[in-house]
Image 1 (cartoon, rainbow over the protein chains, first blue to last red):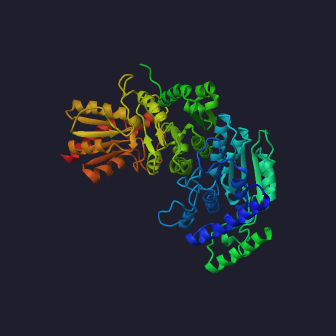
Image 2: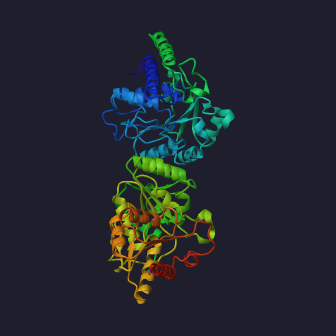
Length: 276
Length: 313
């Protein structure tokens, strides 16, 4: 699948799937899962080299969901791609389900357990460094949240990535501007966020992280061989795709009522039709 | 006989192993001097990773490398590695079950005069409480050598604490039994069992020698692996000896003494006395001075042993 339209449709399908899963599980981090759905779709269905039949393929690209709470879209994609049966999505957060509220390595395709913020980048640095030392060509992608950027370990990882010139490491920040307590700039201001990453020695590009064409183009055009790690600041809308969830902080981990789910699915269906 | 610190024995052995096994990597946090990884870094630069003073990052990087097939030995002063990086150890290492060996150097009260910030007396307790962690405190350079070989073959998370200075040897070049999870019985006796770990073991042996002169026969157990604990050895000691004395260079909370007490209470209750360091900031001094002051040296252990047996008679 390579056409932008197909990818857009897939992202809508993932949004519908994750909303259904959150309702089935009666828990979930709705807003951030919706904001990051386009990025995840582009990575898994378009950009990354990976093989659902062989999740431990040595030369695969690696993906770490550092903002582990946005697991719902990730699980939907892994199931859709055949890493595990789609039926299982209905068990999300149920008693003894392996589909818990943060990525778990019990789920095929998940590289590392995450959930504690600020851990993903150092892990990704380790993966990229191992690849570089072993002269492998794989890329490591790590998706972080913007609220997560207050964790000091993010910046420890940022320094190490530049120090070791890890140009096969791609950091992506789902810059939706909202965290659980409100606007990121009110909670702990990120200020000139791109300048911070540049100052840490990274190549930085800012994009609309809900625009599939821009995401794909950006992933394809990341400069190669610069000796610098790459940062994509993906400006997104929290709750993207569902009118009453967009830019509303309380949907960080809100669970839709059956009526709200019906409305959300109807809105997404309408978006899908527009693409035909 | 030459005496070298455990940390030196560890790095010499690790270098030897790493020359033959390119999957072994050593990570440091601006600690290659204190860990004695300087020679390793020069000899095998592609297998060495300097992380700077960033212990959380160091553990995360180790976990990432381990997930790509490396045998990662992450080395730093135990005081920082065991508490500042604890969440990374819990999540990235233990929970994700990555093949990372967390090597705490200059542990316990090695940095005696540097104050509580530099003491690591809670590491055993916190590491024990994390599911999937193995916890080992080697007693001397020879055991450290054998332990390091065993760690290179052991697939999974381990925390190791060793001290800074050279310690008197318990074992010899030829006699150094080591199996993860299996205590070594060093002396025969059933008046009292002294169960010790790490650098207190040699003090326990000397205490047993002096008690023997007074007609008290002591069984010394080197409990190098605190988790998983050799429960069989503990239960046997509870059944065969009049009392148990545990000795550790740790806080009394959650360490060897409480691990032994737990097993004893559930299987064969016996009188137990726990010797460790007090639950307070310690006085300043060298580790030798602190061992003496807090009763962890041979004389202090022997005195505690006599007091325990007198109380029972």
